[in-house]
Amino acid sequence: MSEAAAADIDTNNEPGEQPDAEPMLLQVHGLRCGYDGTAVVGPLSFHLHEKTFMLIEGANGVGKSTLMKTLIGLQEPIEGEYHWEVERPRLRFVPQTRTLDPMLPATVFDVMATGLHQGGGLASLRVNINDERLGQALQTVGMEQFRDHLFQELSEGQKQLVLLGRALLGEPKVLLLDEPAAAMDPEHEHRTMELLHEIKQQSGLTIVMIAHGSPVARSVSNRIMTIDRDGSIDIERCLATCPPSPSEVGR
Amino acid sequence: MIEFVIQTWTILVEILTEPWSREAILTSTVAGLCLGLLGVYVVSRRMVFISAALTQSAALGVALAFIALGFFGWTGVVMDILPPVGGIVLSFVVVAALLYAEEIPRLSRDAVLGIGFIVPMALVFLLLPMFPHELHEVEAVINGVAVMVEPVDMYAIAAVTLLVVAVQVYGFRGFVFASLDPLVARSQGVPVRAINGVLFGAVALMTALATRALGPLPTFGLTVLPAIGALGLNVGLKWVFVLSAVGGAGCGFVGYVLAYGVDWSVGATQTLVAAALAILLRLAGAIHRRVIR
Image 1 (tube, each protein chain N blue to C red):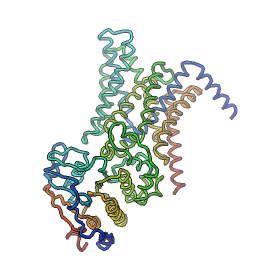
Image 2: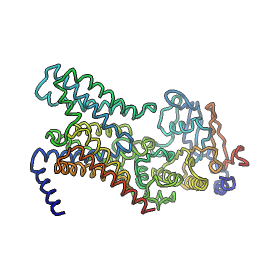
Image 3: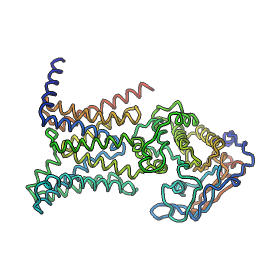
Image 4: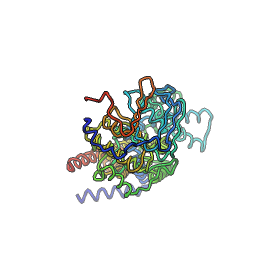
């Protein structure tokens, strides 16, 4: 995606946007995350305000996904703590498309229906499928015409939009996305970022997203967390939107 | 054609009139339904050799039970109950190991299934010559025949099938979610570990019971083949499960009638009928995909 194309996304509707003025949403203190007692990233201390669009960047293997899985509760922290000022069901995770098992011939409808599950225990096994809600979520991401298509036959960009639509079914306050643009062509990446920006503006969502130095992703963010090889972090604050990083200038 | 229909009808009436063959065909049909339903999970989770591993571990359980009966001199009801219970308990040991493997990234399902197949087999070979009187009983478990079925096995299979179908009807979408996208399912509070436990437990129980009643070949075939066929169709997940279950039941029934009519091995015929169904469904799926493109 060129910088010119990145600039096409209209982010001027939030002049002087100040997420710091919004209520606190997440507090992280001395958090170390990893596997089998070995820390991959941390110790980290940071906080997040509502309506922030935070990008997490860093080289492969620095622990971006590990941090996200810890924050969503999929794995226990090795050390330290974090606290969300929002109920668990209002956090929604959007994984990479390859995490869905390709052996099960799920249609887009089947995948979307999984977005209606929440809570725990026996109640979480059953869902009342609300066709109207499901259709609206698909419409939001522009995928309503693919309702009966096999999920695995969609393009990567289309799959990611369906997963985004599924996450929206949970009426989230926070969306955590793991490299949504990893397998997308520039056109789909642009469309997805534009959509995320629109959803954030309309619903007041907070978005935390992993991305690999994408100019278009930077252009819609107002915080950029960069994780270094040594496990430390640097948070760049952007008053309106973050410009492309110096390394991307002239690409 | 009319002659064929009349002949088939005569065979069918004969099978359903005789209590021993009626019980056997009903057991094959009901077991086929349950195995076909569970088979979708087994195939999609890439653990088709679970049947083989469970059969061997069940055989070891039965062998250990007979050894215990001989050693302690137990008779009566214990003698009837202990061997199947031994088989089921050892099957659940394999299931527990599979659940453990789910949590340990360095230990694959294949490794667990391999161990679950090889080690019990070696132990059975080692233990049985020491107790030659029990050899026949254990062989009956490993190489059970579908032509005749004990009523107790029929009722046990019917009860487990009823339970499995009821659980699937209640929590179908939850079970599918745990298989399709376990990471997000966990993030949304779905008890993926408990679901896996229930699922693997049902597979172990049904495999142990069906192996004892029908033998390992049709148990393996009815678990895997209808599901392989149904998974090739573009009909939505609900219909994949329905078709696989109905296909399994149909193959159990048709295979029995065919074997009875032409005097073939029942288990082998049921397996080949299931293979034919799998090929037909796969072809139908491929043609359908080509047409819609």
